[in-house]
Figure 1: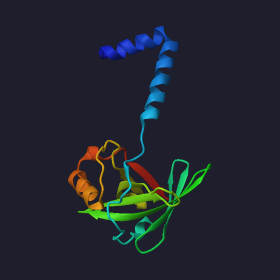
Figure 2 (figure 1 turned 135 degrees about the vertical axis):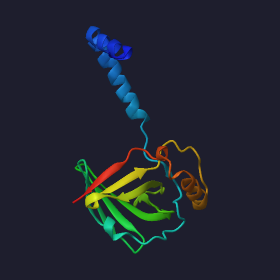
Figure 3 (figure 1 turned 120 degrees about the vertical axis):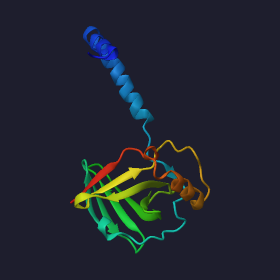
Figure 4 (figure 1 turned 90 degrees about the vertical axis):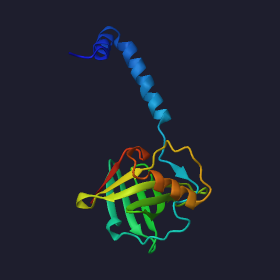
Length: 171
């Protein structure tokens, strides 16, 4: 037997389709307005890059209609170019280790005010990469990398500490 709310929704759709469409569009717009970017901070997990690059991450990746080209910038830094039909954006990134977990600290290369975004990195089947962005629900602010790293260390093993996993397919 269908739950009452499904029966009610079906009845609602059958009797007032225009009203349903208006409400649906309003909810869709609200969800898009309130969606956020991954957690960001003006400081990185490590004050200075210290983990050597992982050569398995070097390459070209595809996610939807966007291509990501990851190259070695130095022994500790990656250059990441995001190419879509509309634009090209350059990022720099470096790895941080917290226990067995590897995190990517990434920032836009040409930004006047550096903001770091953080992703737990996992290399999966076929050399593909899964990025787990830190949740947008983090409300704390940190003044040092040590404070931020301590916070991430405390919560890194909890599933709700991350937003939706993003998979990048290696070409």
